[in-house]
Amino acid sequence: MNNFLTSRACGVWFACFSAAVILSLAGCEKDSFEQIDIDLATLGDSSTKPIDVGRLESEIRHFCGDCHAPPPPGSIPKAGWASEVDSMFKIYEQSGRNDLEVPLKGEVIEYYRRLAPESISLPAPIETEVNPSVEFEQTKVSLVPAVYPESPKAPPGIANLTWYDAAEHEGLEESLILGCDMKSGVVFEVKFEQQKLIFGRHVTLNNPCHSTLSDLDEDGVAEFLIADLGSFLPEDHRKGRVVWLRPSEDDSFSVEILFENVGRVTDIQTGDFNGDGKTDLIVAEFGWRDTGNVWMLTQTGIENGIPQFSEQRIDDRHGVIHVPTTDINEDGHLDFISVVSQEHETVELFLNRGDGSFRRQNIFSANSPVWGSTGIDLTDFDADGDVDILYTNGDIFDTFYIVPYHAAHLLENQGDGKWESKVIGNLPGIHRAVAGDLDNDGDQDVVCCSLISRPLEGISTDDLDTVIWLEQTSEGDFIPHSLEKGNSNHSTVVVADFDKDGDLDIATAQFEDAAIHPRSDVSIWWNNSIIPQ
Image (cartoon, rainbow, N blue to C red; front, side):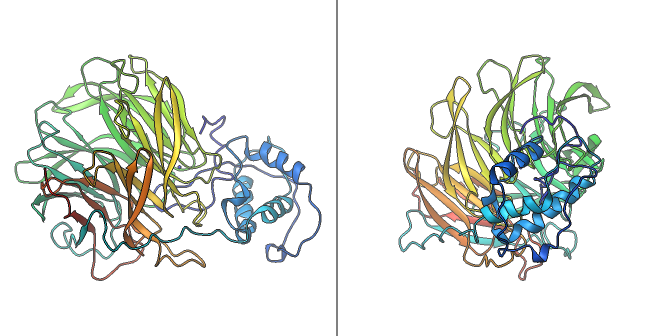
């Protein structure tokens, strides 16, 4: 899921490998061009005709490099390239562009097939420990009938769980998890009495996918901002919304729409970005092919209890997933960090000049448009007083292949605008990673979950690790531990002390393609091995 596009028509080509289910797909395109007609079924390994590798590399680099990095041949196995290149060319054909010199499709297929591996090996499963350093006990929870008004026919599509600690948030009476099911549209609360889950308020929207705590009306009561996609599947539309949920006295939510008529909204963050004392919003509009932006909504006042905003476009790229905020350079002005997927595959810092305008700085760029960015999480990982980034790339919805470079990365802040990237753990289909000291040894560990919500041709996911934790044993060194195998249906993970016993627990949620019985929506891994100090 990295540069500004030179044209809005430019965005789909090599990145548009297939339609994503959650947060994927994008592109680059063209009109008519000369190419050879080929029967894809006959274009196989038997071809021995010489090809000019150097010439083709140059042609491909100039063609798709007009928008993004060309995909490396090792991105997918040899057998997949004929159909992938064919689909890319069809998309380009339909775009209306005619300003690029287009390589011959048959030669491009041969180039990739000859340089691609026969198969891509998967990482070996993590060995089960006899005496683990930390013991977790899993509890599986169905939200039927406590949350869902009636037993839903569709399987769960919970895109986000967020923990809100009352001790850290003024105006929040009790600590809770807020969950967003982007299939059913339900937003729900989960509270805890020791290891008992208590389900609270819920409301049905369109396709909620992320939440943020706020107090926009400054009444001292915590509310929630919800990013509403407006559609489950990726498409270009103007149904995305910023939804404001306010707790009501009857234990329900009142719903206000603060921003609408935009593409698929994936994240909302709050802060005073222009220094006028009012709370503004940064909104990530993921969009799809022709929609997608980062917006700043500057608060202009409150009318009839509803905040009013003016709109400013900060970034016009599609594919933005997360925009968490922080004062990265400690100059007193709130900045934000953006992870952009699709063909861009970049993590970028937007430095606030103090007036609500921003200067962009690159933190990380992948060398492939099918890298598969899935999200970021901000943390001071090395306890040196600055902000580091946990970054994941494991989106299988670009290619529907598992690749060896799916991983959790630590983007370590070196100061003076310098960042160092390090892979800290591999996990096929990794979707999220969060930090926390699970073993109470004073350093940060990492919990990761994976999402492979559809069968993959020729690959069994039964033995794949699906929830793991990375134990930091010395500075920058990690030992992986498996918590779950064969359930690659998690798009979200959160770490917190839910039962208030002095150690960190883990929560994941299900994102399913098919209904499972018995139904399981949320899983809690209770940390039962750490003695509270």
